[in-house]
Amino acid sequence: MNDEKRCQGCGVLLQDENVLQEGYTTNLENDLCQRCFRMKNYGEYQVITKSNDEYVDILKEVGKTKDLVLYITDLLNLEKNIEQIRSIIPNKMILVLNKMDVLPKSVKEEKLKNYLAELNIHFEEIIVISTAKNYNIDYLLKRIKYFQTSKNVYVVGHTNAGKSSLINKLIKNYSENTQELTMSPLPSTTLSTIQIDINDHLTLIDTPGLVETGSILNHVDPKMVKKISVKTEIKPRTYQLKANQSLVIENLVRIDYVEGEKNSFTLFISNDLKVKRLLNIFHNKDLKDKNKITYNMKYDEDLVINGMGFIKIVDKGTIDVYIDKDIDTYTRKSLI
Ligand SMILES: Nc1nc2c(ncn2[C@@H]2O[C@H](COP(=O)(O)OP(=O)(O)OP(=O)(O)O)[C@@H](O)[C@H]2O)c(=O)[nH]1
Ligand SMILES: [Mg+2]
Image 1 (cartoon, helix red, strand yellow):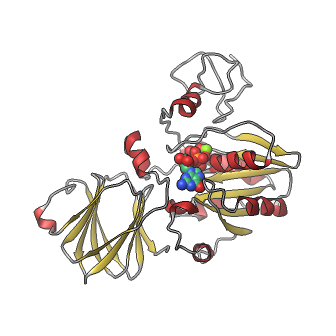
Image 2: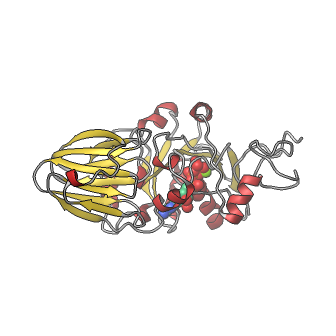
Image 3: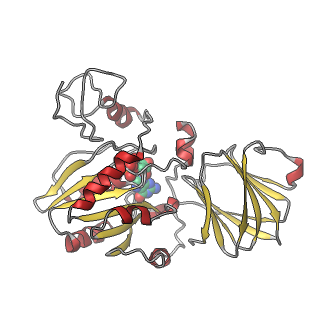
């Protein structure tokens, strides 16, 4: 047993004694645990569900330092409560809106920044990036240099926001370091904090993401996770619905438009997900056995399906959403 060596991909302590436990490797000479090795080389994902208490403790430790913090969030899956992390960490903080590449090109960066600025949560700056497309990464690095208070800069956020992907991009663009963190479409890829030296003046510290138990990604099989994960620009799908018509997304969500004038529903979800339109809600019982939640939509609001994306509904009206009871949905002022 070795108490020191950690996996270079996810940060877990390596061990060669129990194959069923985290950090297992056949040989302690290896740099990666078996789980990371399989994810990297074969795309075989193994889900680990951890308690959020551990992560909150890590965030509290970050809050005890005076170091700069990057809070990474996924534009398609902005968390309902952005204040949660802010309330734990009082440090200087840059809010980084990642995955700009998945939103249609017509969406203006300024609009997204203003939307978040209106929440009145203090950040040194709000920066829009795309790690996948290497967009604005140079600018982000400049601002990190400007705001950093020491060598150490922490990278925090909810799981799957792209924290490890961003650090890998920074390593690749600006460092001689050859380490590569594990990235995956599943939640809880990074298991412990990991320090990465970018250069003599900058050390990034990756952290495990806060788990959103209500994310759809925690309640579907890995094949569906891949389908729901958005890899390319979303082609928004717009449906004009009259009352008593409905939209069904795969076998996952059903949205019945039960009351209101003719209305426009635009889906910002993966292009790979199949959507069926029902012309009469009474003639089809698909997914009616799921949990039902009724929303009275106001003018220009989104229905958010945690982990999948959102539906922009232009006019006011009443909808019934049928979805697994463990998956979170909520409404907000329209993002775009
Ligand atoms: N389209 C797109 N996908 C991205 C981008 N950045 C990251 N991803 C994808 O998002 C998923 C999650 O990335 P990770 O880097 O593992 O996320 P994380 O925040 O480290 O997640 P945890 O370690 O679980 O907390 C992966 O499938 C990435 O390929 C981006 O800019 N655009
Ligand atoms: Mg990670």
